[in-house]
Length: 409
Image 1 (spheres, rainbow, N blue to C red):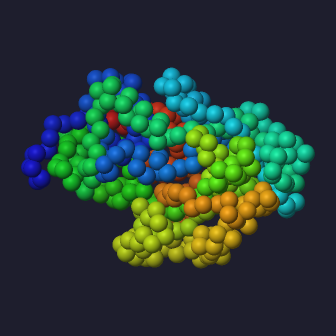
Image 2: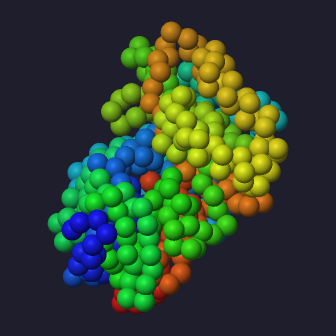
């Protein structure tokens, strides 16, 4: 169809975004209604091109999240669903366990608070451990006390997304890649999606666009209170001779003021070990390098009152993260708190990811998953970690809302 012409045949549901949330939502809808005319529209030329394909691959058990929150509920349910789905589709995963270590005595209070949260969330097998048990679990690690979560695991979420995409197609859904959505217009008879390859019409639309979710929400006239702030996280890889320093997952006690977990060690499903990520402001929504720069993004951030409040509150933390990003020595020092024998020559530059972090107008970083929308459109407004772990449960949640809001019984 030529641009500007009559929209193509009407879909029952269009989903914007072929990351793991969009794919999981499509699966949930197609399971409920196999005859549904459904298509996923993705701006990139492949699926899982952003957050899904750039995360560390941790299958979270639910330690961190406020009891009763969407994150707590959907992470616990989603992990179990993800493990079943992986088993059914021969996607490998391992329960390597996570050790959260308090190095200094002043971190013990926060560690105990973390234990309380994890217990309330029903995380199984939790164990509060001292220095000797830390050494048993991670022979090269040190700390005053730790929290051991034996069911935390690892997997390749890009591979999961590829399996999900094939599953969607086999169930009759379509996936259109290389079609950037440039406009969303709600009409009485549906939603018109203007794309770089022509217009589509759908009776209903679900937007799971990650880093661009707020911009698409604004297109529908339902911008909401959130603005997406992109945070880049850089990883180092441990050299092959250093991988034996880490058995599973070694994490710091997180800063309770921020929705980031801090620099940690992650054994990957392919045998590599990553260290990171830090969390620095990205100057572009797809800013995977330090030099990536989008003037529109920067001007918009600086003009945003919520971002200015955030910057005023955490500028010292931000400067420390920038310094650690540019200084390998500073990055190494953060890692040596947990593994003192790690050497500078055992770190090589690794990949980067960009986290879509929603910011409220009052300058608070949104900690929980957040869904919204009205009429014929539903928006996934905030879905950072542990969204990959929880994706199947998030998909069910969105599909349930779609059934009620769109009348998809």
